[in-house]
Image (cartoon, rainbow, N blue to C red; front, side, top):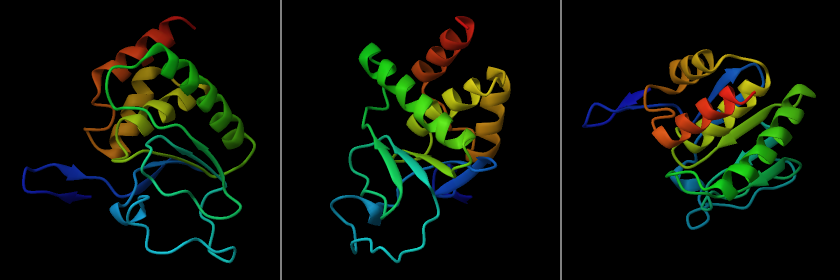
Length: 159
């Protein structure tokens, strides 16, 4: 992790949260407006399945299953929440089937943290443990969006 001028600890681009379950962001050179080259079939494949939660990330390469749903890092709209539940179901199923899964957004902190947390909750982890694990790997700013944490608390209390 690297510090910026404000003392913010920048997490690595991608981090393994649990075996085969990764969480991360998007490098500034891998956005739709700045991608340096198109992927080719022979490129090395690091992930089997990817969830992309911002609209500016360039697509993943060949032979990678990708679920894309850009939504804002803000208060959670109920329509967005319903779609995120479907996405978390898909990613959880892929992960439990043995795929290496990446959940990514722009910074790799909040949107990816929300979906990663939903996956871990589906795996019967306690919410406190989910938050601890994600933050221990991605840093204290992971899941700093209070709306997302409130959603997770409500989700857990209803199950």
